Image 1 (cartoon, helix red, strand yellow):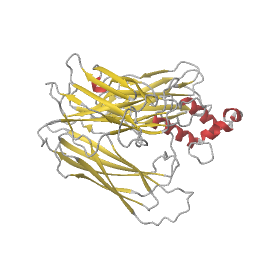
Image 2: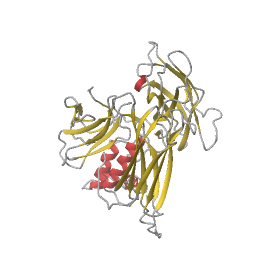
Image 3: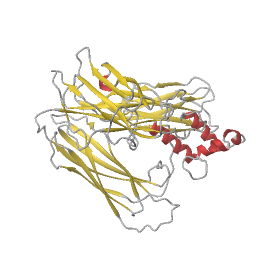
Image 4: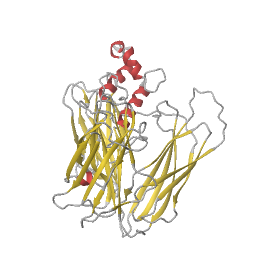
Length: 485
């Protein structure tokens, strides 16, 4: 197995709460026997304990190719559901009557093969920022098959994706003055030799449909590069205000093989006066070429692919420098633990930004809340991802090893510097694998936060608690074969 390469990222902690009783009951495919050219939907049904509970998230996961043998490929697709308990501070009568719900989610890309679909519902207690840890879960699955193309032609799908993890409706996010990136993913059923397209940006609060380009002073493309399967391809691009036109091709006649995943990363400079809120990304005229030089048609979809670029202030910016990173978390830990210098470290101006969950107290729950927000939204760039005064060395300890046919593990050693407080880093999974967990041994003096919504690019934050000794840290990295990455 290829060596794992650490990059950049954040910590989480955990506490117990009383279980709840919402249940996901069924997941069905429509139509029952689809073809590769049909529009395919997953219909998920379940119940909540009362009308006061809220289904706050219903999200389709990414399609993963399973490491199976034989002429028929196997795929795995997941659905994530999150049910939130009622607010404990709102006095309302909540009758104990089961509240049914139903959600329909459409698959953007579904090649010929056999499928495993799994819907997992998580129940979380009420928190104002909806970042509480699950207290209960239920799962239901089904299998179905997608027949060969019935339309007699192949097709492609372009999509927008967050470089780390998509949270809610945002495919990219940052604060005014930041540079933030969005990835363009390609789903293709036959080899692709080149892509030519345009990405348009518009403000949905002003224009219901894209008209002229949004001014470059709001969002301006500043960098475009090939990634993933397209690494090594050439990219030519031009900018007109917020609009970017690009051409992706190979000067060595290489092709993008059949698959699904990011091929391009587009980064935007967010203007200092850009109004907070969502901005929409749409593809303009697009041409996707086969190795024969013929055009590949777009796959039929129920709705146009639209990306969302979310602009807002960085969460938990305790030092007020316009960035959110591990340095703010270290200060928050000191605020939460108190001590003789707590008044100096955590004055009222800092305390006001430290109460992440809005409960009027500053404690470890606010540390958890802030870490989750930073991991989730990836605001800003990390100019100094380490909190400490010495050199921190990060390296994998020996090669990764497979412990079963589909699961493996690796050990990541961190040698902290002097006065170590914490570090953010990211771990890129090798092709064909996905990271499922990153954790410290039991009894560790550190909080380890892990976000693996996108298993191909896990984000981690490690935070030292108070005066705990800052000795070497050995993290266990677990991964599994997922294929199609």
